[in-house]
Image (tube, rainbow, N blue to C red; front, side, top):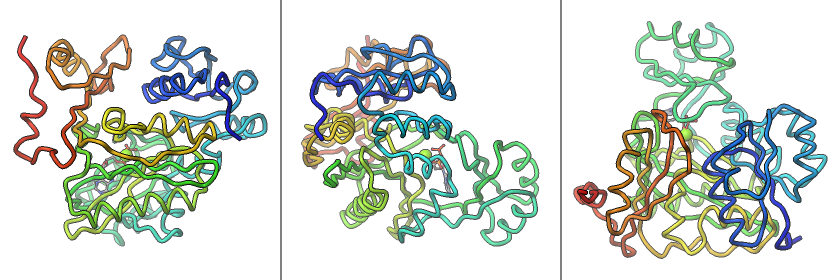
Length: 374
Ligand SMILES: Nc1ncnc2c1ncn2[C@@H]1O[C@H](COP(=O)(O)OP(=O)(O)O)[C@@H](O)[C@H]1O
Ligand SMILES: [Mg+2]
């Protein structure tokens, strides 16, 4: 049941989530083998082995599976046939059924609503008639999204007036689409939850996420809001993990409305950008928790010893600050080893810790992120 040290954990996807998972795996004595299309990738750079090629290449998928003891993901949009093949060859954690749900916003919302979890009101949209009917029911503004392959706000369009419908419908691919009622949220929060092979469920504290241009900019841990809201968020995340019979780690993104209701936006069955604060503010980070769950190790409590602010470093503008970040006392830097800083690309992040209960208020956050002049 417990994967012995020296075993190899296969990671699908070559990005920073895979890199930080591989580093956590190494600390627990495991080797990692990364499957990614790029010859060099943030994850492959720190792994013992790599399979390089297309995720849909079944011969490569088989070679990869033969090289590892267990398979996990940092990228969840694996083609269905590759996933089916993998399942027949090695344990896949989280399981393929969970991936299928999280790959598809319709299945995801159906699962959540069936589990008694509230989401934004939504409707499946296959054609323009469906869209007109959905808008008539849900009203405007509303958000039209692809059911598959969306990330960082890509694959969605805000509909404000009836004139927006046709162009948004034409632009968004692949179909089908989902229309969501616009949630006028007070805040966006998330919870990282893990479930072990033995069924133990642990949930990290709920955190607040602030975005810039649809990309996560900053996480505040814990989320500065009433404890009843934070507990409800954790309860929802645990429910998701239990109903899915998760083995692994999963992020649950949520909206908090002005009256304190918590709606689930989406789930991601892998480490998540909004969990990066755990790397420095928790004895067991989201990445260690991920590896522990996947390897069948016991899960420790998702304890937080400090409050934290996580700041994402995106694109060339933020990376120009790297020398100043390194020169600023108290910042804990994480670089993803990407050579090229394209606009909008996540290049790294830093964490700043505060004593528990000492997270700065709204006015203090900017000061907390101030960089040294050099
Ligand atoms: N129904 C909605 N109402 C209001 N804002 C939304 C809604 N859906 C998405 N958003 C905003 O867009 C962001 C990205 O949407 P999300 O569904 O999480 O897609 P992605 O897969 O790109 O992360 C959310 O974090 C939120 O800020
Ligand atoms: Mg999201």
